[in-house]
Length: 146
Ligand code: HEC
Image 1 (cartoon, rainbow, N blue to C red):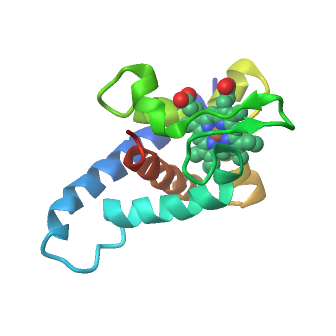
Image 2 (cartoon, rainbow, N blue to C red; image 1 turned 120 degrees about the vertical axis):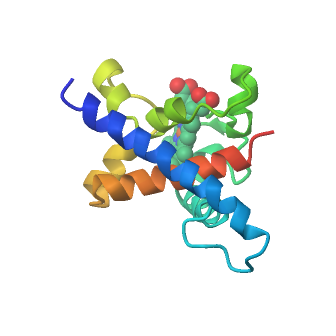
């Protein structure tokens, strides 16, 4: 369980940066160029990241598809809130699912890549940069909920 404290602080960091982003929203109405860490800028970067890394399995619209090679269907990511019957986007749960490092410790392998590992081991990002990517992906997922 040595990673638990580290992971928790990562996700509190994500929530914190999302909250900071929300507070920037109020600037946007009077500012033509969104600040670098505004929710709009984060959402835009999340969308680009999503198209590059997630769309191959979840579809360009995030609605999911049948994955012949894995013999399963990926999840419809526009229904994260609805499928759980909640009003607030479950940030911590989804961050943990996407990151995956904590879940793999508990359950072994899974069909979706373990993005925390991809970002740290393949792309050599540090924990702060990973936190930033997660915040961007989650900002985008929150934006596409219906
Ligand atoms: C290789 C295919 C693949 C790729 C690429 C992929 N996913 Fe997934 N994803 C899946 C599958 C399959 C599931 C369903 C897993 C299950 O049913 O246990 C899933 C489930 C999820 C879930 C859980 C949804 C829910 O309602 O519980 C989230 C969130 C998610 N993916 C986000 C992402 C994000 C963000 C990316 C890009 C960084 C991504 N996925 C890339 C295959 C993929």
